[in-house]
Length: 311
Image (cartoon, rainbow, N blue to C red; front, side):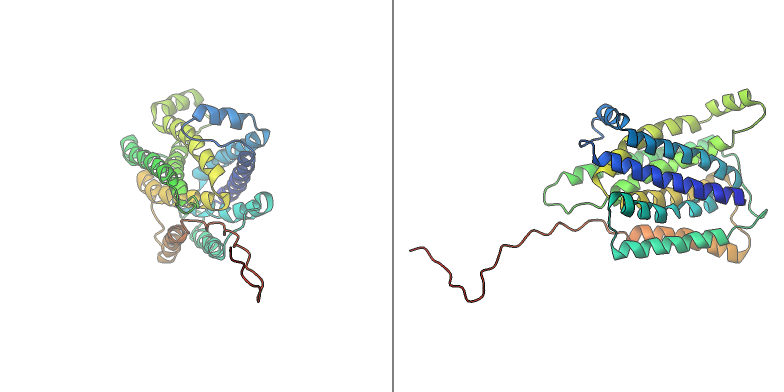
């Protein structure tokens, strides 16, 4: 079990570092758009810093495979949320992004949620399922993918309106979070096919499952959507929203789809449910808009000065 906790914390570090490196690379690139995916890919693949961030995310993906073989889905998601604290620290240090007092309180609540989930774990008491019915997985994932793409396009249309308050990226984060939630379920499914014996048969079984194709879809769309959103919004807000949506989605629907039982002990059950609920409450409390930059006020004449009027 503790191998899984260590792998989850390692995945957090790799994901946080990867997102921050990608964000820093994107700030130096021309404006990208999901309407021009080929141009977006050409620009990011020409940035060594962005490639370094992508390699960090890929390493986080490998660590996540280990996590899903050793920890229940709900517990794993609670630990993944802890990566938000490291992300904010890296964003402040490497990107110069500032967080509001409200957002700092939210991060404190996320740490409390992490502690609740970790305390709900007990060695040998939690079952880790390795299989789920394919029709059920498709029934859960396909509508979620459609909802994520629709929500992202809806947010794109609203940002084109003039006089609209600058968006913090919450809508983008929710949309991408839905895609990454599906990707997380697919990673869980892929982990169930990992084996050291009968590799050929395991590969064939994996190709007959929906998981590789869900990963391809979420990888392609998630890449384009997340890079455009990262360039426009603060990483210290859009990534926490995306991560929270992904974790809550995976914890709830993944637990149901893969048939993993919740803790029978009332105290451990209360801790796990409270941790997940607190994460969702933090998401709902996040501000939707950044403040507009204050316009410089016109200089006032000195006290006692006479106002000149035209003749």
